[in-house]
Image (tube, rainbow, N blue to C red; front, side):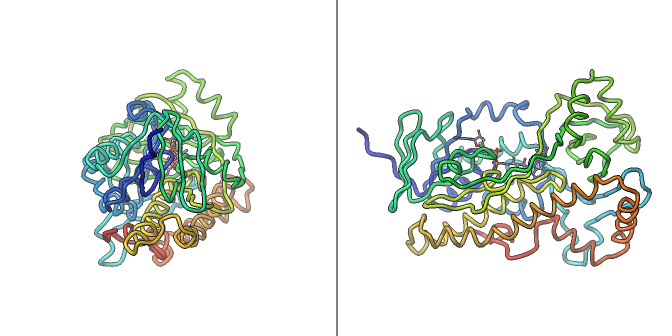
Length: 409
Ligand SMILES: Cc1cc2nc3c(=O)[nH]c(=O)nc-3n(C[C@H](O)[C@H](O)[C@H](O)COP(=O)(O)OP(=O)(O)OC[C@H]3O[C@@H](n4cnc5c(N)ncnc54)[C@H](O)[C@@H]3O)c2cc1C
């Protein structure tokens, strides 16, 4: 039998988190195997994933640092301002990056990128990175994590070996399951409907979030006179909306959207995502680290799911590359503990904050609704609170890994 091919890191799951990590490590000279069960051509099909992601400024820095940015920049739309309203209240809060203190106000809060462009960009960047080998469509049939190394046999029969394996397989990670890491799932009884809307007037690079009775309704600026809509509704209502013909669906959309950008038309298909909070008690095990949705799944209310995954990527890449530089075992408990410590607090905090926000804004009871509206109006008058919010939205708070600070890995 052939000897297994040696790698520094094996990554199972070639979604946006997995391939971003592969690129970061590959660019640092490490030999990486990335495995995905889907064929690349399928993942790059425009109908595979209709979402667009709000990438926080820190994530944009990561994309720049690993050479991904030139492949996606032409498709990116800056988010200059975020406007939040509760139902049809006239009180609102808006967060404009130009109001930040001098020295911090030159860059936007983040960038909108359609996921299909991120996936295509990752593929192009990886094509130019010989350190990364992509095995797709393929999957790890057998994984043995021993005290000295990880051995993987792929469905295609190939055998791979490395000191560390990373689980980037999304919400239903099989590596997580076989490692016996429990997952706590809390379904929201909400569905996120995603469509692209074309409108008559330009959006001015402003993102809008409306808190409606069924959940948040987000209007996110993308290229041209187009916005990506993330429309959250209770499951039963969402199913009824999704079954409407295009005229009925557009009428419902326009009702929630309003007419501030003129007439609105849906372009392309409708996508829907059942929403769940899921949390794991730990993101590491013997020679295993979990990243992205394999390690956490949060409500899209703040557009932070992939951003959390990108923070995992930056922290894990730094822990691995630092270990490689001093000749340390890349899958050692020290490396894994550094990664776990770095990400735990942020992940747990954001999971609870997004959960709380979703619950808070769905309550219809008059006293709470009034407090909420007054609260938004108050925050709008407090520059310090707004700066804090914008720092969070940009992902520039806390003990950041080098890539998120805009430094080289
Ligand atoms: C409606 C909605 C809107 C969102 N908007 C935003 C936003 O604006 N900003 C933001 O930051 N986040 C957003 N998110 C969250 C974001 O989309 C996810 O967090 C992100 O896509 C997760 O990426 P991932 O690579 O971790 O997982 P996935 O995208 O699930 O990728 C997992 C990959 O692993 C592969 N795989 C699975 N099992 C195996 C296996 N056994 N072997 C091999 N391969 C396997 C799959 O084929 C897939 O390619 C949103 C989410 C939703 C639902």
